[in-house]
Image 1 (cartoon, helix red, strand yellow):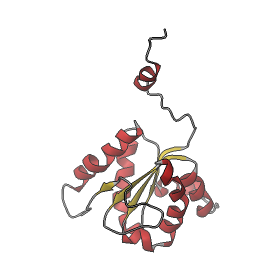
Image 2: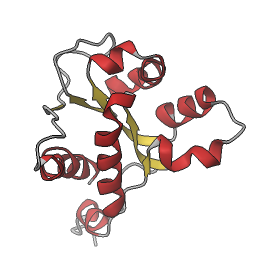
Image 3: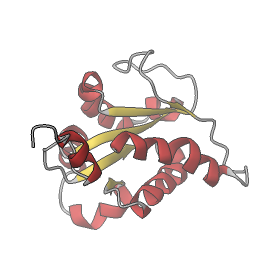
Length: 160
């Protein structure tokens, strides 16, 4: 029994090293201008059984509650990873800025995956953090396939 590779067995059985119970595997932060992209990423992750926080999916669950309190809980504690779609819109808007203030505390723990849509610089997100560079153009008829290949599969691999 001492020669059994328990780490390999755990991995093959689908058990993760992260033993914390979290409501979501991924929480997505985005500006409204990128909602279509964020929604597609969320839907594709859900198709492969990744629990995702995408605000639109849970609006009715939070009726009567303060979004600020719920977003802080979700982006700080109740998601394994934060995927943030970063561009000038994310930097200039109030809600994405609030979300970023919540999750930037998780950057040193490597729990944040940035998707860079442009070259906007963000305080609290180091220039050398590895992310996904993607020039999104929803007029491109192949954008969904590109998102699957360049974003969704990479996130899924990071979760494995």
